[in-house]
Amino acid sequence: GLGSYYGTIGGSYAYFSPQLKAKERYVPPGKNFYTNPGKKGTGYGYANLTIGEQYPHEPDGYEVERINAKKVQEEHKQLVKGGPFKLNLYPQEYFDMNPYFNDKPLPPVKKPPPEKPIAPPFKPSSPAKKSGGMKGGTFDPYPSHSTDPYVTKTSKAVTTNKERQIFHPPPGPKSRPVTSIITLNVTR
Image 1: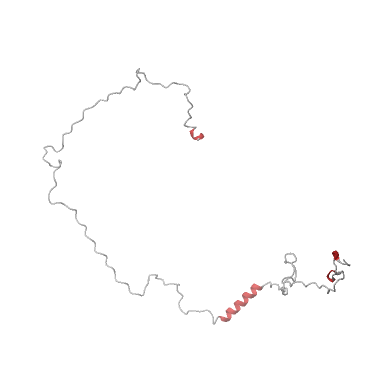
Image 2 (image 1 turned 135 degrees about the vertical axis):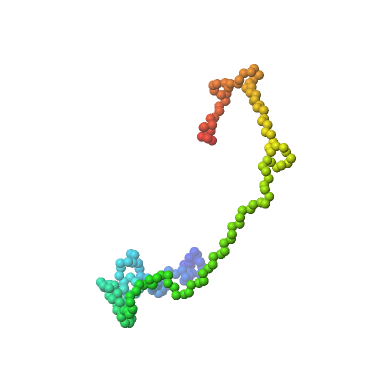
């Protein structure tokens, strides 16, 4: 087309014109407020880093404790009235010489409880039975003791096989491997 982009018929659009629009000067926005100043190292050892003023240095006196104690002593002396208390009596001990002295009357003496008389041992009126069993109609006091006859033990024959020979295990190695009882706990 007639002086148009991509062959348009109606001419060029003003939107695509190369002429720059009038723009105002760019003013960058200001920074935000800082609540604390920027950190410089750890903050210790730098003066005037706090919000308020720096604390003034006030050195302690050399004899501050003695001066304070003297003030306290003077205040105490002002509160004290009169001199020390003096008693116009003969000096005595702190306590009475007799520690067991008591002005109160003594309580009545407690009577010990009456002792119970020891009862005499029991003695039956009838005499005891004579010794010699239960008196069940026997003539002798004890049954006659009869000794058992001495029985001789018969010696048993040694167990043997059919040929009347004692069995002896064959010496030498066993027919199959047998683990020893001592080494049984090691392999287990």
